[in-house]
Image 1 (cartoon, one colour):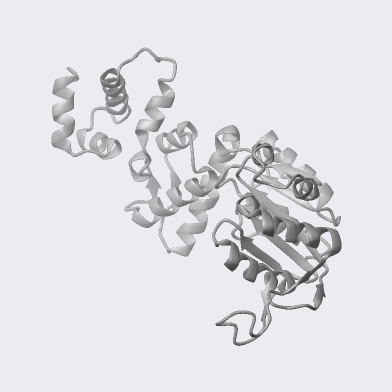
Image 2 (tube, rainbow, N blue to C red):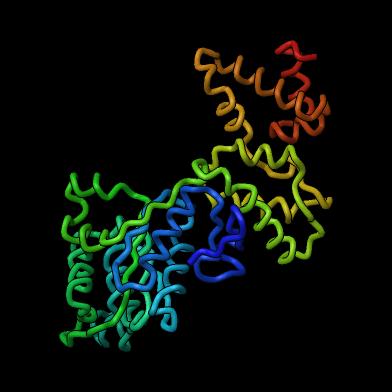
Amino acid sequence: MPRSGGSETVAAFGRDKQGFSALIAASSSMREVLRLASQVARTDATILIQGESGTGKEVLARALHEESHQKGGPFIKVDCAALPETLLENELFGHEKGAFTDAFAKKLGRLELAHEGTLFLDEVGGMSPPLQAKILRVLEERAFERVGGTETIRVDVRIIAATNRNLKEALRENRFREDLYFRLNVFPLRLPPLRRRREDISLLAKTFLAHYARKYEKAVRGLNQEAFGLLLRYPWPGNVRELEHTIERAVLLSEGPILGPEDLGLDLLAVGLEDSAEDEGMTLSELEREYIKRVLRKVRGHKGRAAKILGINRKTLLEKRKRYGLD
């Protein structure tokens, strides 16, 4: 079960903890995911994890494995979208010696390697229809043949699949088998994007900062109020992965113990546009003027800091201030 401390669950997201304590859940949406995950973890049910790229699907899959009856066995991952069909088939099922030109020896596939453990099919929506049929057979019979072989191999493996694609749309377009979808979707879990679980952003940022400060032996203790405010307003299109990389980079480049907004290297135009979403009638020049004005106000007119945040040089900032009458 997720470990709770008062109103929040604090843990190193996929870093220093195992099981469900490897996920941070202060938000109600994430807490609900962990509640459901804890109910299904110790069963043999096939699980389909859905969510945008970077939301932590692999972290959740590993947590499910570590909380399951299969935790003593291996956790084997296959990225179904990263390999062409023939290579993916070989990766999944292995091959017999002589199966093709370069097959000088028998090779075990990921399915065999995952015996008595968990096979994680990442980005399962990228799998071709012929391979979908073979995975369907594995789910139904727990059996397959290696490439170039005739012997039926039987495995005891739990399958967890994940995708950032809309599988229902793929069903309508006949790009994904309906029978496989229902076999995978026995117990669906959907991870919310970071922009919909903003209560978790500060906890995640602090956790990542502490982790990377230790890893890189940097004397970084925290973020100032402006930096936290920026993290909360940024839309995070890359979700938790983008937040982690942002904090890692900031720690690496840090020159002091406290990080400010200028250390984060974020595209603050995205923040400015999000903050000004209600001003749909504004021209691009008006949006730029308003955004520069906000940044200058935030840094109390400090031109060097403002230029760094805006991603332009000091001379360009001075020219824009003059053009927009911000002197």
